[in-house]
Length: 368
Ligand code: PEP
Ligand code: MN
Image 1 (tube, rainbow, N blue to C red):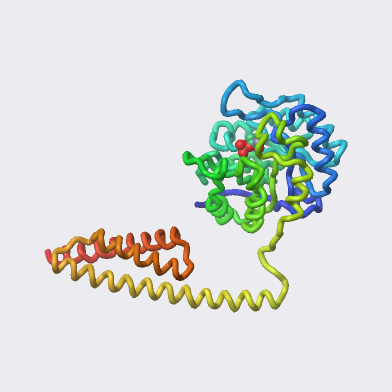
Image 2: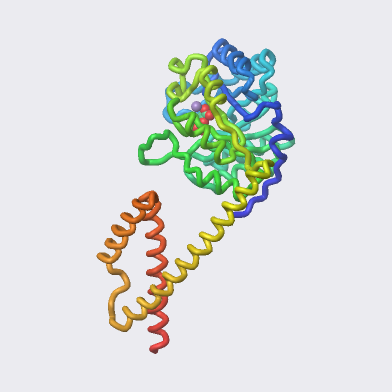
């Protein structure tokens, strides 16, 4: 997939000198007192760069708390003046953009329910024309990379170059330990397509509960993501939205202290030497793996010819069951993950069937 993004590096527009980059604050601004006191506690940790708070809340069902609305912009302004934190909020319409810009909000974010809708994203993009404000684009609720990239492109085409993506996980029909499945592959694919696009992880909306947040946060940094956006509330269990997933400012501070930050590479020559030695081993083993797969395919071809001559079907289920059973036992003894082994065998089996089909059809053509 190609992209047409023209982006300014993160350090040129969000450099508060704090490492790692942490955006934190309540899911929703509820009252002026709640927002201001949370902001002060977060600022006091000395670890938070940006205060987040939703003032227009996208709720799945009507009748729930839908945010305090425009008045919350004044609270954000006060929080910024009193703490020095930059402030960010979610915008989902042209009106939101205009009001947020007028109130001096520093960074805007586009929520997951807006990213799925190109009409909404275009409306937001049009309202942003001529502005120089940073925009963070959450992944769409459904696992569709094109929608995510498309939203970033629409905003970028409106002239916004201070852009980052937020990885907040994807809805899935099956109930799992996560509120939204991380599906790391999609974020990695986005990074592969646009290597210079910063990706910020949102462990709160991925997890849906406090317990898993440290695990996902660490994993995000291990995956070379550029920061976290975490929901933090002065009294989480009393929060009006997302009560189960918010952390107190103190718990957030402890979480940040426990994170192990890694760099994409090291300037230590001993490490570099050892790494290049190990990489040579990997190269050698991969060459060997390719050779073994190629040898296997050659035998598959011979079997194809043999089956053809003897008028035997390509697919023989008991043989396949036997292979999976036998290889899984070996894999277990070799400490390989069973699911991985089965997936690998299925891939090899699929290619073997394709190969035998090719052999049989070619034989048929040459017989005519
Ligand atoms: C939020 O950040 O509070 C929010 C509504 O998130 P999302 O768009 O990821 O659901
Ligand atoms: Mn939330």
